[in-house]
Length: 285
Length: 239
Image 1: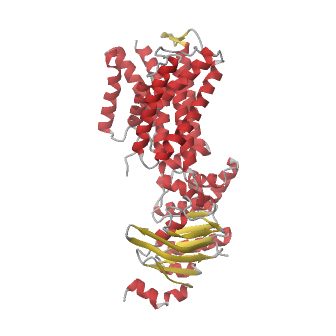
Image 2: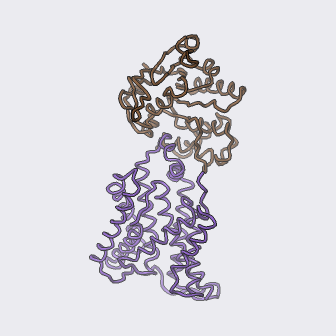
């Protein structure tokens, strides 16, 4: 019971971390909270369902196309909805909130209220350290999630794009004075943030099927993770995501499943009481 | 032809006329000091020139192009770099990365090895070569100033705009800094526009001096002419 709850917590925790990294990136660069984050997560799930199950494509190709499409959609959203609101964070908040409702209803209209599920990548179950049998698909999701997070860390820490992102999130004006075209950077990082939601979506939907509103709790959790981990901290997203995944699953296993979502908020309140800037957040000078 | 030219630049904030009809020119290869009492509009002029905000009226011509009201990043990529009175490094990045950010934007097509080498060269130019892996927040004030200078050089500028780089330095450090900036100008064939309060340093370093007072150009001349001009003495000391 304990071991399998920890395992479940890790799988979902990695997905939380991925979704939170996307939110954190966009908040850090643009100071925009994308309320449609969860709907883009779901959209990627629908895309991979559509391409793999309905059109019969290879599941990896389906996932990559889903990622690319959501990335492009993110760029379109940035250019059409977010860019005209630069300088007023409230407008972008409201616009993305409206977008999330529009998308939910569009999904309902197009795909119906039933759960849809892309095909499993792998079948069967594996024996984990002789402790319990665990679904191969969940293990694959865990590995894929860790791999994507590793790629994101590499991009942010080591590439030119990552250096520009870090510089801009630390001091936007100074970055501009050093030649950073922040309008273009906004567009790319918003697209990347959406692509991270999509990555979480394509990885998790074979396990947890998509419904039109299934993105809402994921986005909410991602916001909680970002605050829990500390605004703008990548490690905060990872540690916060894992912590939340573990606490939810252990709490559900040993206390009550009915309170599954409460545990996360209890942790959040406790952390904020002790460290108002989050686990890895730096206090504002 | 002048590298940088301001034509009748005016800027008002609400009812306050911060700059009115400022004409000036900076010839290539020279060190030009911009002086004036507090509130004369020196930093405002920098901001209007470097794209922090658009002047209310007037034109800014840089390297033969009209850059009036162009955003800061465009102006930077055209070859204008700037430092601030209070240094603002990217605190959570290493010294080398700080400069790489500047260099990447100036040379987006160049390979990583070039960018790194270029950044390293600028870092050793200011004497921070052995700190390249250190995060910028660990530097002391003088080192941060050097880093800021190196980062400005990392954009490979034609024009370097310095805003009170000598503030907080002691006499010996000031002397070194002046030497350093003169050498830099010769070595990199820079043009320097320099706001400075430390008069001794200005007199040593600059070839031309522009004096601003109450948002207007009071006079332009050699350092010797400027310090002996009664209008300048009056602007600084009063009647």
